[in-house]
Amino acid sequence: MHEWSVASGIIGSLASFQKERNAKVRKVEVGVGQLSGIDVEVLRYALGAMGEGEGLEGVEYVVKIIEGRFECSRCGHEWGYKESEDALKGISREVYGVEEPDGLESPLHFFPQLVTVFLRCPKCGSSDMEVVGGMDTVLESAILDEG
Ligand SMILES: [Zn+2]
Image 1 (cartoon, protein in one colour):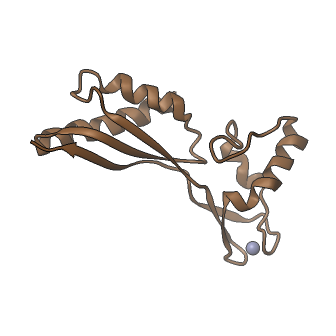
Image 2 (cartoon, rainbow, N blue to C red; image 1 turned 90 degrees about the horizontal axis):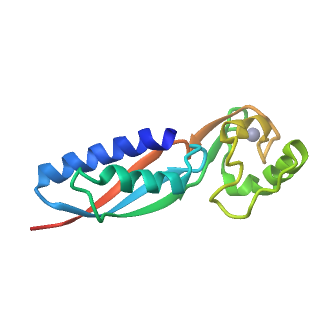
């Protein structure tokens, strides 16, 4: 139920933003980290449900996926999830016997924390790396109806 606590934070920010500006939030962009383990559909539902009664009825939520990014601790190479996608699909098949669907929406969806265990640096082959992007879910922008 991680989605609900994330939604709660976003709704809280929006509600106070609305109050501060004395305006109505119309459209909101939320960036969901690919490695955050957040289920986009559950998050969307949670936002809608929690916005009720907070003056956030009818807000349009646009969810964008933020690509996972890694930095090699050995050679300093930085790369994105997309670059390792094929390798990761192979791992899913071998280790878990599951086929990962195409696209950014849900690869390694059920075990995003394990990505770095299986990944190798595409440049030097090291398994020593840091996740430098795509872990967080952030409120990117809110568009107001002024007046
Ligand atoms: Zn490297």
